[in-house]
Image (cartoon, rainbow, N blue to C red; front, side, top):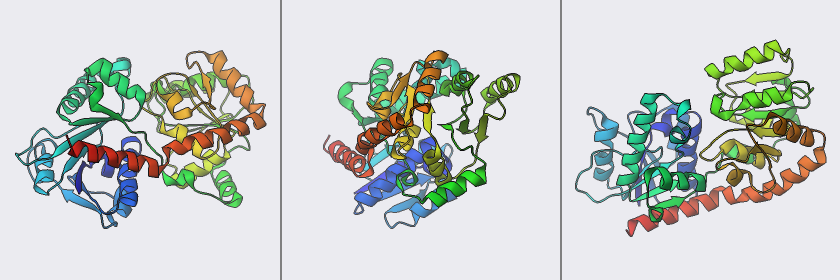
Length: 367
């Protein structure tokens, strides 16, 4: 079977949608190596070079034409003999020919509808148009969580019978074993404190890390934040300066996957106080790393965190503070939760996700 993919994010996004795309194709290539996976894009990149070295993952340059991704890519997949076309990031091509092909689209979240204040007028309307068009024209829609499935039903009136939930996995780096020396070397090289809590993700309002900074005022607990800065970050910097917390809050960016995996292992607690997510990959990265998790009780985050993570009201600074202090002061409690969560997170292992996804590919061919 040949499966075609919209590979724009696969090649050109270094985080979120890019990681999802690369991990999905990688695990299918690993566990179902007899199929071909054709990656359609205007050009490739170094982000996925190692994957292109595999015999069953092939880059296909989109045919020339205006708006080629929308008007040429689908027809290219049909002409290459693909049985299925999978839009990995909420979009499908607009133009097709008469050749038979089944269409699947992954919808990650509808946050732009749930929290419109975090998006521009233009972005909200473009996202809505693209996602709505894709869900209507797809034979099946993949949601990355039960929360996203419910949002599709609520906002787009997508029939429940048309939606399948397939969870995500995370990069293999977070499932590796490392020596104590390797991990300690990363601590020393990056100048990390001996004990700290960790947050990973873009530093933006929806992710809500400012609330954690506020909760840590008056404590001696160090916070390490790994992520891309936005305009929102300036508000955090201002607060840190006003409250003389400069020695307590540490910002890191441009760390590679192995370094990040070491940082998760070094952290005492991982905290993810987001107001809303499609899934929450950093949570399972932390759990695979056997680091206890504190996260919001909202949206899909309990799906990712499972029954043994600690849940907060992300709007309540005192609740955030009390949960941090509880795990910080009780390391054995954190270790117990982390061990139980590690058993829970095996449901997000690669083999299971690959098998679930292939079953859906086989299902759509029968429609």
